[in-house]
Length: 589
Image (cartoon, rainbow, N blue to C red; front, side, top):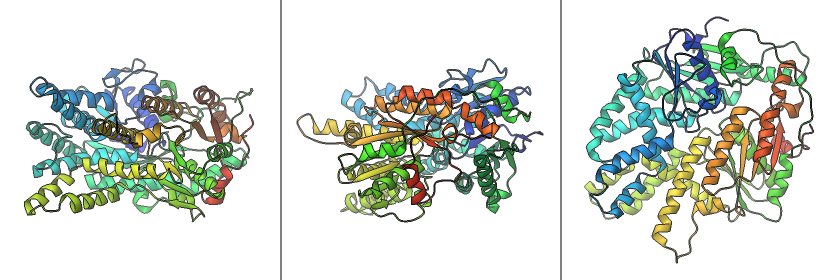
């Protein structure tokens, strides 16, 4: 195959973005290997809070530039949000430690412990790579494996937001540190904006699967990123099932579904330069597999190995357990983007509602499509979404109505200025989240969460609020915070949703560890889209099914409860199709 379109006349900076689970990391890593083996010097950087670049190469990378031994000329960097935030806090607090009372130091540290500070700290490192030429002078290309779509849009919009906010010269700058340092940050952010908007320096690669929802999300991403001047991206449709000539009805259904989705690409995406990458018979883990992804060589599908496999439970059995002897509670579906959290959350909500329970289905994912997934009303089921823009508007109106009472025009202007800080979104979304958590005392609340990085930032805000309440209320006062409800196994059940592939399982394992450190024990794992459970006869699909053995075994080791959902010929859209996910028997292996 000839040089992929998105690699032709490649500028210095390249961003890979798209809905979670579409293969951004695999494509970014494969591109890095491809360029390095052409003699280019390449720095591959992950700005995803849930990065797995190290897992792909079998290395421990972290927040430092690390050479990839198997690929001369290639180095990688994972911008770790927690490490970045800790270094950022220390940089701000260290100069005044010993000069201010301990109480003031503790207050400063707490102000800098929220998710907004974590995001800004990560962005500071990201900005240095874009704006500081000396930082990347030894590399011909700097590739960014970005976070799932919602986080990426937020990250790329931050330069403009913070620049505008700082230019006005007012407001709460607690997330950025002392006022004395703002001039340096302002110039860095402006430089980052200039690089992002320069098409001779920067290319955006939108990655999608050949699925209607994934392509629709890419369409929204293109429109939103146009606001920061990225107006001519490239489109990559990844993991397209080729025609192997088999008569497998599942393979035929998948190809038909994919072809229909690609044929329906809207005009404003159809005119973009496009590359199609076929589905590989092996997972993109390891340098050899990455070479094959863009190498264009025909790869014969390995012969599937047959053997005994453990039996797993069904989603319906899980719903039976969730609904046993109770009529309320919080059920949270968490995991990497693109693994089917929205579908699983909707299926659980429909099943509970059809059992006669009062259910509220909601989402914290800005890119969720609950209405499209349900495709109609269901008795006993209400649906909502925590929209960041609506949450901010409501919060600003409420603050102005309460704290604005009695203020003169100058005071109102200062308050409005403060509410224009990007940190306001963190507070507003957290309050909506807390309200949904509280509602689970009276009914079932099924929550479809945002991709992993966003969810962890939200839980971080929950933890900060809990610590603040504990200090204010003291030990003698009874209180219940949202974090305490999440930690209560009688009130909250967390379902970790994943795919039967190495990287998503590793991602879910990392999330399980993060939750446990927050005192939250996952209740069960749900493995979605299993080919081995669907038992295909197409050789390529059968090879992919055989590759699920190790990831499924890893899930079984980590989880007390496991449900496996087979890959279906048709996408489960509508209440009846969703209900079918919880009425099928457990897969037999």
